[in-house]
Length: 101
Image (cartoon, rainbow, N blue to C red; front, side, top):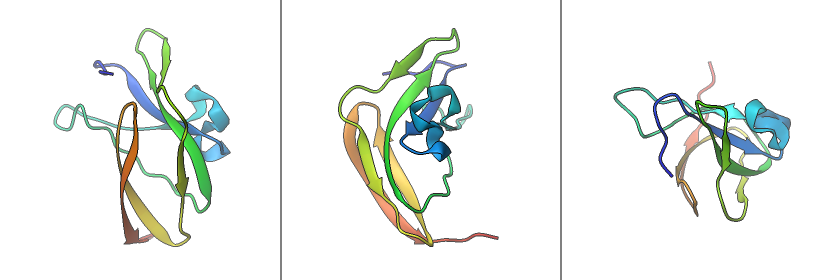
């Protein structure tokens, strides 16, 4: 799936922090002219999470990622960097010590 300038990619899932399955309340990911089409975001969670990626189209349409929900078990006190591709259930992860100021 391709995004177009003006679209927003959102991580939506099973907890209030990621919208409780309501796309407009999910965690919005960010991009810019130099990083597009890569999107990024920061979540502060310490529990299990079930989620999907959703595109909020500039014209108002909502497009859900197909397939099974993604799942993630988070570790308290750790930061996690995720690498995902639309529609591919595999997730690349790297754990880091949390750096909260």
